[in-house]
Image (cartoon, rainbow, N blue to C red; front, top):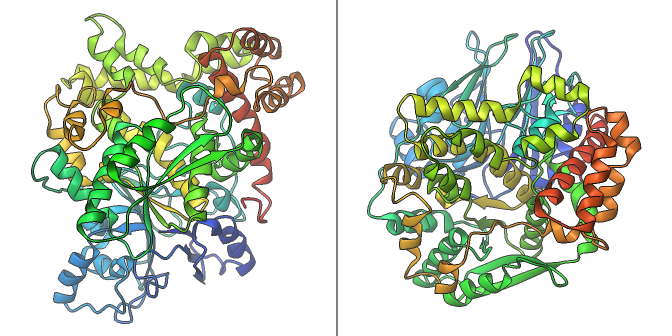
Length: 601
């Protein structure tokens, strides 16, 4: 697991070492173990390494003496690297170590840009082919988008630059960016940036399962690959058990994140089972809570899972007075606004994981998308014929429903969104189109969730905020065999996570199996109530002077929304106010990202 960076420009000079050092410095938190950058006329390739597989080997960029001119860097893990190494060795390739990424130059030499089709893992790969007459840059990310890669192409000089994180990318000289005009509406309508866009015009993210080919002086040509095939064996519990055991093997300490819900509970139970059966030390589990008395605490459920699985349980209690500084750090690390208060919880949780000596953490992300766990999915499935289920589904994704958004917007901004269209409109249209060509509603929703919502909303956040503390988050539910198995189930088995409840019947406490669904987050409505620890921060971000300067939100209506919430706190008003504040803070933070210094620390 690492942070990677690079540039590619025809006919350009060798990049300045100081510039490359500035780029690296902004994402060094994710790769504290080693740092190497190679460069030449018109190109650079670098890596900040978090040593997980073969910690004593694996120097990046990867080069093989018998393949001069092919260089590669990797962020992530290639789980089938031993199998690939054996096959490539049989073809005459030689390798200096056991590191997973060492196979990349040889794999490219054999298969060219199609090399990524042979990878099983979570990865963002950059590969430079500098051989005479073959010069090109190839970028690739895994099928589910677990490891993001951000790109900037300059149409004026034909250069392409990339980095694992947006603040690092912005430290490259010549990266021209500006906040997207629709960024505020997108955040309120979908809670984060949508599709391959980021909140910054000029910065894109490579879509899940995509390979980008960059020729000298040309724009990246992006194509989606077919999914990596894996044949699942047995039922849901058997398939998940296999993947948990595979991902629990590492040369560094491994723990599990336990929220107290079904998904993380299954991963915890199976990982603890694996530790006992292999005579490994007991599994350590981590759960985040907040000091004081707050509603919707999941701590008791998490303790119940830990007792049943016999783990060494860590209950991490964060001081609410710290939340303001946590928000600034999370916005800075993400590089764009994410309206879910879970960002603060995620950042604080992985801080505790790292401080307790763990480098790898197993987590339960992805189960809701694959096994139909969201309430919005259930509502869409029971919506009668003729009802606008797709529109209602899109509205359920929002931080602020459509009518509230339009009420808060200034006349000019409301007219702009009406003219250009909202991300919510595009989501609803995609769902309607899928149903129109014959997909059942659940399949249409699952396809949207896994292709766009999951990587943009969940996985980029998980990657950035775990790697902010140099922790590798591994996701058993998103491995190819589990994905293939989930998609093969009948609709009834993947509605409301029925298959997962059956898999957990013998593994989890009845209290966890019976409890209502609840997301891992923080109680933002209570924390924005009178005297709450987040109130002053939100008031500052939503001051009339700020909003009038921005020109998108009516300051008087935002003030009335806050006043109504303080009289009668509601989750909806709290989330809307929180989302507006996050966007305002981001617009402030992004201005400092253009200064090539250690501002992402």
